[in-house]
Image 1 (tube, rainbow over the protein chains, first blue to last red):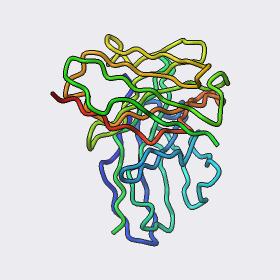
Image 2: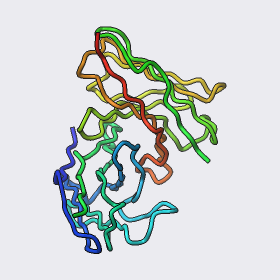
Image 3: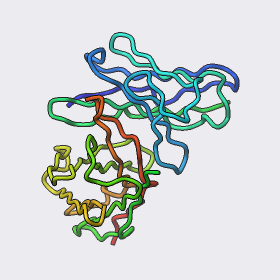
Image 4: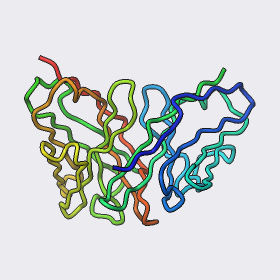
Length: 108
Length: 122
């Protein structure tokens, strides 16, 4: 089965930029989606199809992909950005949805 | 506004069947291009996709659950359900229902329920 790898944790000071990575084989051929999950809440879609933002998600949250690694970038980090971030792809054969292990973003 | 809400017993005895229903409002389950999914999260762990059901009743499950999972849908009541048999303590988790959108051919989850913590214990 397909595997996505994320670092368990990332720490950043307020106002700085946070980078959350997501790696997988042949990721360049897949579309990556990202979710933010604050403590005790359901996940919320923040980036879909590698770099597109749903309405209501600020421009300082962005996604990109290069080779086999996708990166979620959060600029001007705020306390409210502290959360777990999960990447997800579609594994076409056999039509499965696959999540990375999640990255806990801590705002120092 | 699309809203999903899980309901069902929060405490299940070992070997019994865990059952949850997701009530959907603001959108009809009959619409395409959407699937209706169940996802769970073990305490302190990542997200695990269980499977989906289409409005016409077609299902697709994660092989990890295939032998003991069953999903159903009732479009007249606009809800869909999960049954997970032979529950053990390892099934203690928060269960989310979520809609996946495959308009762009790469499905992503655009709406989620708040989640239901289900504990398997005697």
